[in-house]
Length: 182
Image (cartoon, rainbow, N blue to C red; front, side):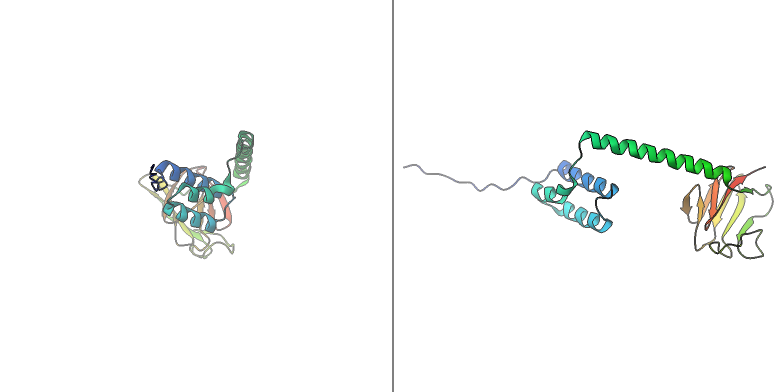
């Protein structure tokens, strides 16, 4: 008489590498626009609580990796679009009106729509008291004064204060200028 023993086996636990690979695929899918923001967040939550590799596979099944040719094509397209952005930025930089930096030691330059400002910009996107430009410790500092439509330096919006230099592109609402010392 032969007896057979059957052992119940449980699926192996997910490794950190498997989970990281799935999270990377989800991030890449969101970056490429294959997933909406809400879908991305929900799938990330599910990936973090997944217990089996089948669950991870289901979360990333529609994000199949591309072949090397399509990866190369996406690389070329992204490099080409970066060049066009650089050309556009250089073209705009030359066309922007100059904003002369005040002489060192003078008072801070207030910028806004209000007539009492040192630089009055009469545009709907500029706040009444929008920003202030001053020199501190030998550096030019641009301070956003809680403007509604924001202040930008080289295309990046900021809150609070930031250091600016000659040649930087600054924006107040939708009005842009190039800082200059001459």
